[in-house]
Image (cartoon, rainbow, N blue to C red):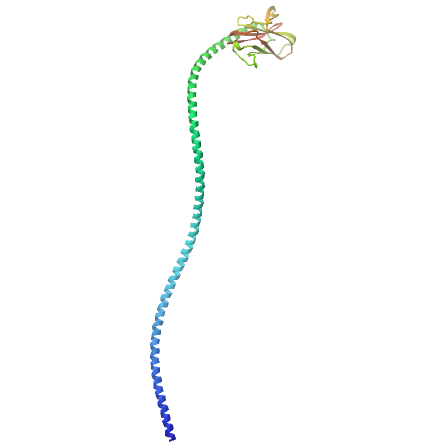
Length: 307
């Protein structure tokens, strides 16, 4: 009984084990099918992942190239940005300069306007001056014609005076000593005030005569009287308040003279002498002579004219 009971138990156990084994096999089969299905799915997924990986790798390469290009572009853009900043800074500086220049130009424009107004006024003044000068030039032309006539007259008078001096000098040369005579003979007619020279008879108040005595021989040196005579062109003495009458020897002959001035001079080898005579009355227009004498002859003479 025990054996049967044991066998029954064993059979039950084996049945249970067989059931369990069938169930386990079934479970394994299902699990295997599931695993195969999962494995196929995984394989599909792995294939998809590999494709995706390859695609991603391609995209990554493309992105890397794009990144490199963008990095280069970024560097270029940074450089362009710096250049643009510099350009903008330069333009801003130029704008500031232009603004300052515009302000200066406005000031200069105002100054130029003032200068233009002033120049226009100067132009009007100059035009008025030019018109006056034109009128004066016309007047001067007329006066120039008159002056030309006067000049011709003066030239004639000068020639006449030169001829008179030449004639008189010839006479003086015959009367003077060969080695004792005056040189650099000069006559000036002066006004009374400030000793100004004049040639007008109505203004003549004083006659100044100067001359040199040079290389005077020893025998003529020493104290001698020197006379100044003033005559008209006919040889007649001018009117004198205190005429000086004297006798001089000319070429061995004694002659009487009427002098306007007299000086006792201690003659040396060389000296410059000067005489001044204040006129007693006004002289008429015409030619006159100034003659210097000493006790032994005529020293020299010169003619002058009063108008």
